[in-house]
Length: 445
Image (cartoon, rainbow, N blue to C red):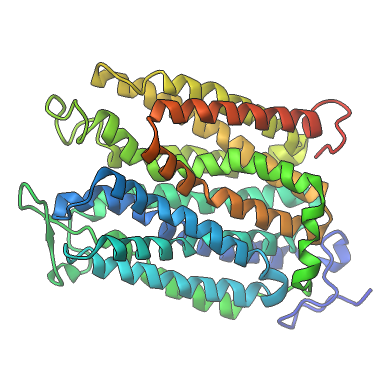
């Protein structure tokens, strides 16, 4: 084997399974740089879900269905972008991939920054900007396989769990800080075009969440270009599509759609769902103060915070006990607590909000188990090149979650949708048990 040379941009002789041909410092540096960049990507992806509930309050005139579409479209585009990015790691290399991705985030950031300053911005333009925000989630299917090239299988659960979990926290972070950021001028840029609450006339800087991370995005692009290296894993398009001949690809796709797809979908739609069911646009609007408990934007961040944190923390346990058992436990838990949450979706009192939200938070915890466990499974079930492709593919399908959830919620009653999810989670749990988690399973992982 070629001797490992770490002085060049391309790491010739790199083999994570051989300690003499692996450098842990390079691996972990790659993980942290790409994870921070991906965190910004998830903030970009989910800034739409934080901004959309505020649009009508600053003078836009959008229907409930239009708002669901605006928050759903980033899920559609992220899934489509992931179908492209999943093929890029062996073609572009880690350094170019991460740098290019960071620069692409600036497009939707500046787009939304200017769009919300003008209430005459058309619904079509808002949909276009929502589509572009999906770039932030789309790069996931390039980053995760790329990072997988740098770690041995024995550490894949920890490495991929940390990268996915910590980057997923961007979903929670942007929803947490957005209401706060909208309340004051950011670095003096409020003079550009202060937006105002439609009813009270108070200033609301709704564009702040779109622009606050732009400087950090530029910094991470510079760091990625100057610090990252490439692993010489090469595969053309034809070689990479051989994953679709393996039935495990399709089984793991169903499982990941149930785990991450539902997690991402509920994260994107939860603020609107809470508002429409318990808050400012529901039948309880006249009896509940607008700044009190049911205001979705003030609480929705907890859902992705719990799910993403669980995913990050569970990686070492997946390395120790295997991912399959945690995947199964997570899917079973998601089925139980989604069903429990559905019981409170036709409330006769605003007080039922706390029960609904508690069930959703517990469901988020179990989704974190699924997402951590499934990403441990894939490097164990497939060889290194195929596992990267499967991670990219399943990630792409999972990214459609916000779109699927948003569209279905616009077409049917929330309770009907929730019970449909319960059935889907049960099917995924059965597959996880039969093929991966049970004693003497054909594909333990």
